[in-house]
Amino acid sequence: MPEAKFHQKIAWFNFICCLMVIWTHSGNADLFFPELGQDAPWWHFQYPVMQEILRVDIPCFIMLSAYLFYRNFTMKRLGEKLNKRLHSLLVPYLLWNTIYYVAYVAASRIPGLQTIANRTDLVITPSGAWQAITKYTFNPVFWFMYQIILLVLLAPVLYLFLKNIWTGAAFLLVLFVALFKGVALPELNLDALIYYSFAAYAALHGRKWAEAVWSWKRAALGVCLLAVGIVLSRSYYTHYFVPGIVLYQLLAVIGIWMMVNERWLGEVRPFMTCTFFIYATHFVVVRFLNKAAALLFPGSQLVSMFMYVCMPLLAVTLCYQAARVLRRYRPDIWKTLNGGR
Image (cartoon, rainbow, N blue to C red; front, side, top):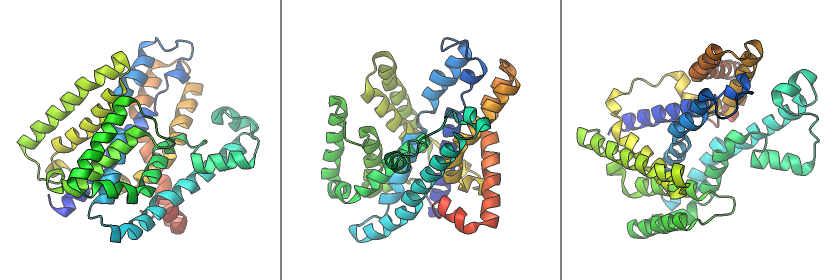
């Protein structure tokens, strides 16, 4: 597909994944109906059912990040790529973690905010601050960004295995064997390594396939991959077979990418380019709106449903307006917080 269409499709996928993440965090049955418990139909719909549907969001983010990193990659460009990720990932990651840590410490000392923050009198310690800033303990939605940072740092090692089509295929096979064996890696999630490595392999050896122009045959293959993935996922929900859900999420992302016709996608709007900022701020907005609504309308099924269904729209609108203000009045801060995007 043309270069412009490729980047347009990437932008759309990033934005849709961002909406899916917001929706994943929009559950409010625990706030509106705490007495009903997990057996309530509305609770069951928001959490197990919808989260099963939306769970491909983070694997998709990881695979898009890997594909873009390894697209046109050579070892000569390693320094350039790492420097770019330093400003687009590591710096904003540390900065946002610091902001959330300071905000939670402050909120824990303000009576009116203690309930909303669900924290009381946090004790500041060097080890606690270090964990908060480097390990996202007060910003849990950044867990996958931590994984991507680790994977970027492993670029020289991964490229050593993936640069050749045959050693790359063997490396992927070893990863799948490790998955079936239940191998656990220190710090790094094995499933994240699989998603990242597969997308990197596609960027190095399968660009013609990954970036091919849409066709009905291509879409049909995508549907088949998605269907196979859904079948495999049932083994996870019935027997907690972890490889089943990992393969589902891998095949689902590939299948959906193949199914979507790039010619169907409209112009990328300005608010769609702020996905990093929206991702970094949405959780506070979502929980604040849900908690406020639950306090004002306790036990209201109608309000609970409205907030859940409309939350992606509400969160994107509020986060984008905050981004516009910040970009207009403090473009330097905006650029840093948004990773130079």
